[in-house]
Image (cartoon, rainbow, N blue to C red; front, side, top):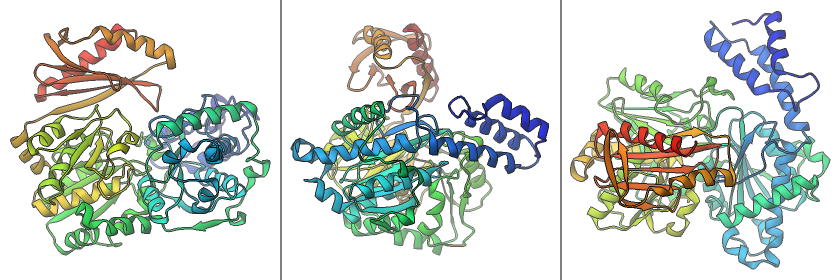
Length: 578
């Protein structure tokens, strides 16, 4: 829809203070323009391009401190592009990481967490560097490359790529670490920074706490010897020690090399799919980095039974929050429902490719169910023996399967980095927020390994995922999880003090759920507060590690009971003032 000059002036005056980036809200204007485009009869990109130029100038030239202090949470650092995440702040955080490698000589206790024994080793092994499809990603990555190069580090430049693929590249190249400029599934106004050490997995808390401290100190000082003014104007082709890599090729190499360990065969599975006419696969990339890889994963086929949705570049994600949610999955559902094939597989992947959710056109399968299915599949069909690992906020379906199969369970707090103690031991490790990985693969959540798992499940069992899930539920029992969250204005100690009001819900106390008093039989406090009731249903409340939210998770043993648990969790939050 064409925007008139008068309309454009009014919109700019509403959000932009001429010559003052700090008081201008470019993303509020971008969101309004996207909504105008979505409600009209076509797109007018010319005005958006004007706003993008202003936003790019803010990202490149902002010399203020971030609005929110840097904090590495369960999966790196996230903030608003231009306000928190900009060239100088990203360069300073990179400097904070370089200080860790410098500290090895005097603090050898860092060695097990970093995975290198010296600064010189880290420089030689180098960094795998990439970004997702977010606005300004290439500029930010180029600035990071300049800081790393000046510090003597080799750089393996992947360009736009996914988190799981970059982690595989770390392992294949034996690199010292990776940096991915991504806020994962956060809305379009966010940027982010993920740091993975030499094991390819999310950094341990011993590192993220130090990165947080170093970053805020450097930002407060406004200076680092690692960062010069020209870092803001670098051209990648002029930076030394940079080698461009095919990161997806490294991922495929790792999967093939470890085929005997995990039992999955990418080449055979794709060939099987392409050779038969009773299967259809539809993948929604939501305009994210996976759009660059999806066709190659399926041998660049032109077969109409392989469908890529939202596979074009769009930093606004068409105005949706780009998470693998039930709402966003509906395009895949309707696409599959229009197909005649008997075996249907659909998936939606978030922008940096570390989260995935499934459907067969009739049944939605979140990671709560899929992770348990993956464990059952690898254990029973691929003969892979070992424990299952899942976070405490994840469905207990996997607990029941593990107990029935005589296998151990590892259940840490939320955050993929908390699986480190069982990497190489657990057959599958997953969390309810749609992240999964498996034995013989990376210790980082990876949508692509999830997609390969789902494809092999369908091929080997000869069943749609929903039918396979129902078969498992008939044997082990059904579980009905859900989750939600509330935005909060308080943080830190003040938030924890309010949440401490939940401590009164102890064992033997009751909670009103759907008009019935349920007795608490067990309380788990390793991550927030998880209250388990007599019928094995439960609810859990914890502060988010990446957003200003308090999250709650519930699970009922009946389909109708889940909504009552959600209402009970919300009532608890109201009681404590949240």
